[in-house]
Length: 53
Image 1: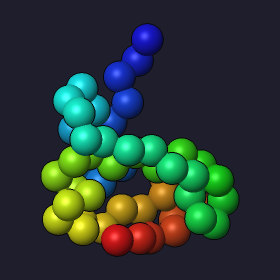
Image 2: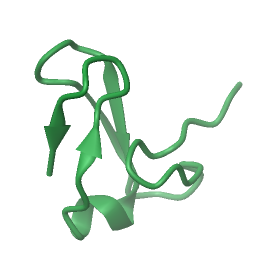
Image 3: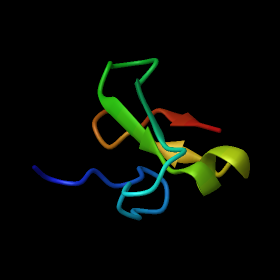
C-alpha cells in the first residue's frame, strides 16, 4: 500500500490529522497534512490546476 503525500508540501501522510477530499472543480483527490490545513497553505490540483486555501 502506497503512502499518500500532501498536495501542498509533499510530506508523507503517516501521522494523524490529515484529510482528503475531492477537488471542487474536477473531483481529483486532494490530500492535506495537518500543518498545511491549519496554516491555510495553498494547494493546487495536479489534474486541473484549481487552487485553494
